Length: 224
Image (cartoon, rainbow, N blue to C red; front, side, top):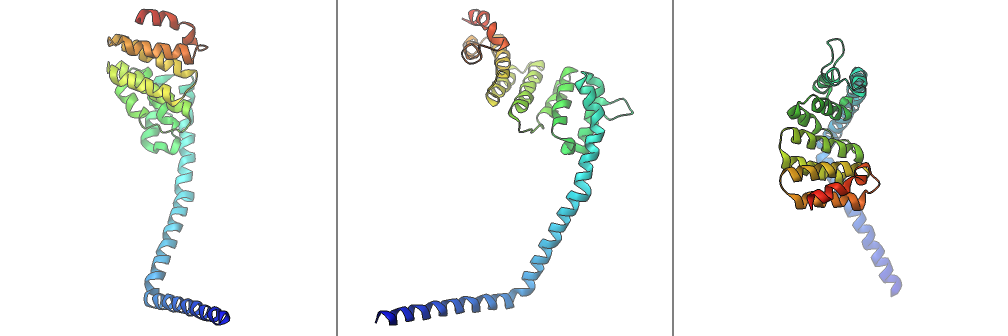
């Protein structure tokens, strides 16, 4: 009896498999033209993407990096005007961003933003800095803090302190103390001594060994 049940189950299993195979064959026969059209289209798309990356995108990235090199050297030397606008013979960072975008690397947005910031061109600085999308936390925090500097230059103090506190939270390291100090000073300028004191005490508690931490007691005393 048990053997009969096993044989019956095996027969049912085989029947189910055969039915599935039959339905698959039927579906394929009915739709094979559509299936092969889709496969062909996917193959063409894959080849097009591969060709674009290998033949266009990657060479353009190499070209962008080469063109950006003189401007980045000027940036490293603190020659802000030359770095941002070039000299007619070599491209500036503004030209690199316009012609190549992120193909030259996301750092060009940060460098262009800082150069504009140093020249007092705050709106332009913000337009570059907001496009920076580097993943390294310390660099990302610096870009946000530089946005704070630009907002401060525009006397948009609420936006500035928001940027500074965001930058401090983004990279929890010794650089955060500088961002918190800037936020605290602006809070005092805005008449919000409680928030300023909060920033100063955070520096004292979390970053006592920072340069800002050595001097923070005078700011705390002033805000209390």
